[in-house]
Structures are given as C-alpha cells and as structure tokens.
Amino acid sequence: MTINGKTTILGLMGDPVEHTLSPVIHNTFAEACGINAVYEAFNVKKGDTENAVKGGFSLGIQGFNVTVPHKEDVIPFLSGIDPAAEKIGAVNTLVRTESGYKGYNTDYLGIMRQIRKCGFDIMDQNVIMIGAGGAANACLAALFELGASKVYILNRSIEKAKEKFGSDNRVEVLPLDGFGNIPGEGLFCLQCTSVGLSPDTDRAPIEDEDFYKKINRAIDIIYNPAETLFMKKVREKGGRAENGMYMLLYQALISFKLFTGHEPGEEALKLAERALYEKTYT
Ligand code: ATR
Image (cartoon, rainbow, N blue to C red):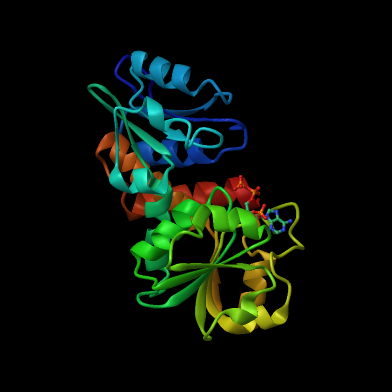
C-alpha cells in the first residue's frame, strides 16, 4: 500500500496502546478491501482526551477507536452519540462528521454478533455474567439486547457490582461463590473478568466444579490464551466454550464499516483472524 495525500487516517487513542492488536486488524481489512487507509495507535494520557479529539478533528483524522482510560471521558467532546452507546455510557468508536465526531459502542455490537455466530440462543433465558469491570457494561447490554430475561452477575466486589447494575430489576448481583442461588441448569455464561488472562493462565474466576455443572454454553472475553482455564472447565463438563477472539474481530469489523462505509467480507475476516493468531499464539 502506498501512503499518499489521499490516505484516510484512522487510529486508536488510549493508554497503554503498545500491545494493541487493532492496527493489525484494521490494516488487514484496509488492504483486503483495497482501501487507501492506514490505522495507527496513539498514546493519549488520561486528562488529554479533549485535546486529542479536537486535534484529531483538525488533522482530518477520519475515525478513532477509543480504549482505556477514555471510553467514558470522551463523551462530552462528541458532536453526537449513538443511542445504544449513550445508554451503555461508554464509547469505543468515533466517526468523523461535519461538525465533530459521533460516538458508537461497537464492543456491544461485537459481543452480540459473536454470541449469535456461536449459535447460542439466550432469548427469554436466565443467563450468568461473571464480572462487573470495564467490559461488563457492554456485555450486559448485549445480553439484554439478545433477549435474556434475567442476568445473574457474579462478582468479587458485591458493592461495586450493585452500585453499577443493581438498580436494574432484571439483574441480580451475587458473590462469586453464590452461584448456588441461581435457578436452573444448562445456562449460558459470559465470562468478563480479567482472571485467567495470560500470563496468569492457571486461574479461573470460579474454581468450584459445581459451578460448571450449571452451564453448558460459555464465552470468555479473554482470547489469550486460546483456551482459558474457565473454558477448559466448561468443556470438561461437556459444555461448549469459545474465547473472545471473534468479539475483538467483530467490534473492529463494525468500527471499520462505520469509518469507511466498507464491510470487510469473509475473506478479509479470515485474513485478520490469521494475522491475530500469528501475533497472539506463535
Ligand atoms: P476493569 O475494571 O478495568 O475492567 P479489572 O479491574 O481487571 O478491570 O476488573 C475486571 C473484572 O475482573 C472485575 O469484575 C473484577 O472484580 P472486582 O469488581 O471485584 O474488582 C474482576 N477481577 C479482577 N481481578 C480479580 C480476581 N483476582 N479475582 C476475582 N475477580 C477479579
């Protein structure tokens, strides 16, 4: 690809960004789609969000992904916000408009798409979500959008989870060892804590074997390692478990479409998946 005066500039703003895989994915999409665009990672410190947004706009940057610590901080500096992102209270994608950037949350859309791709139907079902940190807001919104009737949130810090999500009467917050209070079996579980992430691969957020008897379908938002201890435990009890690699790919794919108007096809997705595999697992 030749970078020239017409190249569309895209990027990620966050801190840290040194290990991000987003440039690999988006630059693969751009090449596969034959689009003259380049995606870079910009380290933007907390407190510098407004300067980065204004500077990016003045420089003609077409779009940004936004990550920690700016996903909430960026909202006051947008010219518009997608209703779903507004409801979630976090933005991970900025798309240039005439008057400024419009904010979207493609994390939430990516999670929904992966759950659907796995064929996990959660319509009118009780489901379990482990975790109440930064990733949980988009995860919870996705579960309800896919029709979950009730979400049992298991979290280490009960008070924090209750403060964030307790006011929703479709949510029940329980401690990590409180899973015995969840009715039913054969449940779907979305694991959205950071426990088990490489290099701490010998840990799972819940170790008790009885928990894994309750669930038969699960997604771990972690994708490194490829099989987390949580996934292994689900599989050992005969359930299906997937890692979060497709969530990452889909949120990028949806952002890329918002940035450029082009939706990467199956071939582009496969190329990006292969590039991610090489970066992550080899
Ligand atoms: P962030 O809040 O930035 O998403 P985090 O601090 O790693 O990232 O927390 C994400 C989730 O992982 C939270 O649900 C957190 O539980 P708390 O709300 O109790 O902090 C959970 N988590 C992180 N480390 C954990 C651990 N060692 N055991 C159990 N849960 C843990």
